[in-house]
Amino acid sequence: MMKRTSQLPGFYKVTVAERRTLVSEATGVDQAHMARALENGGLDADTADKFVENVIGTYGLPYGVTLNVRVNGQDHVVPMVVEEPSVVAAASNAAKMVRAGGGFTAEIDAPLMISQVQLIEVRDPESARIAILAAKDEILALADRAVPGLLARGGGARDLEVRTLGEPSDAMIVAHVIVDCRDAMGANLINTIAEAVADRLAELAHAKVGLRILSNLCDKRCVRVRCRVPAEVLATEQMDGDAVIDGIVNASRFAELDPYRAATHNKGIMNGIDAVVIATGNDWRAVEAGAHAYAAKSGRYSPLSIWRREGNVLVGVLELPLALGTVGGTLRVHPSARLSLDVMGVASASDLAAVAAAVGLASNLAAVRALATDGIQRGHMALHARSVALAAGAEGGEVEKIAALIVEARDITVEAAKRALGVVREHHTRTTERRDDSSVAEAE
Image 1 (cartoon, helix red, strand yellow):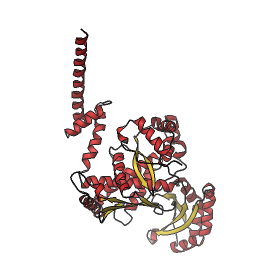
Image 2 (image 1 turned 90 degrees about the vertical axis):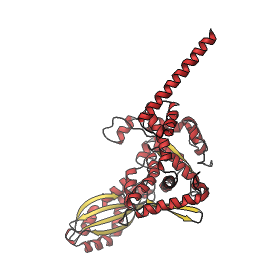
Image 3 (image 1 turned 45 degrees about the horizontal axis):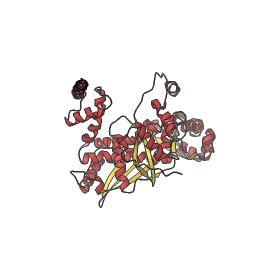
Image 4 (image 1 turned 135 degrees about the vertical axis):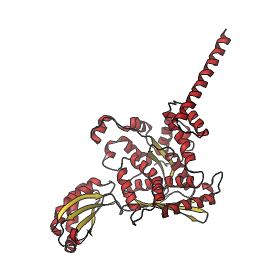
């Protein structure tokens, strides 16, 4: 077994082809396989037509990798699919800071998902609840028979919960079948179980069947990530590390007290998590729904991570539900999604959740550190300038030149980029003409 590494100094300075070589060497993934899986996003229109309806093409997004990620003592090069400038670079930089404190540590719950069955027109809710719980073994056995493949892999129904909702006049009962999904995200499995047990639950409750569906608030399937960052690696040219810690703790307290700030705080976390979820072919909408519902579980929307000082060390803790899969669905047919798991080197859905959450905490650290020091715009807009340069028509080596010019002018707009592009191209034309004239004169 080769020793994986996520430390690749100077990675951003080399070409795309050279980066693929470096990742191949760092992870053991065959470079030719990588090239095939990433060609045109790894998905042609004919294959896409089998994914969703009314297909007329595919839509590409940048596929980058976050470096320096170390989780529970293991290195991971982490693929990210994201369109926002600075997200990948910021996560890599923050992960490097965390690495100086020993890397991320993660704890992952068992992969338990909730299958919900709603029962309506319940005449006696309490008697219904007692009757359902008395038949728990029967219901769990019925659920297991509906998913023999999952049972063969060591998963299956684990528990039964019953809740009463509403007022006596319109009371309803919701039964939760708790299911171990193993390495699957589990949506189809959970929905199958809900439909399999619904009629029997209705008989027991003397009620009618309502909705039968999974819950994306998978609060029995949480991941908790923690990191420690020494003050010295947080320092900037203008601020020492202790001052940066104070600024980050202040940003955390702001999010804890204000839901308006907490929403943006959590968006910074999901910048990292969503990008990993998309790269691995998982359902980022389900992840987002579960994360934000969990953030509001107390009745007030709160940050998913908090930052505190312990001596001269910054300590960050993140907790959220994270239902991800490494088998089934998109992973079977999308080569880029399968490649992502190979590059990352994860062996299970739990491993994937731990790494994704670590990247989320790294993204959060990068954002709050920027806010506490130079402000979010300085680094973000410098990277955004390249996109603006492209939009203005810059090509090849022109992109970096135009981006540098509009950043220096503090006018990062398409109009400014077009003006700068005109100047650069005119200068290039004149230089070429002078060189040609000089060559002619020498020849004569």
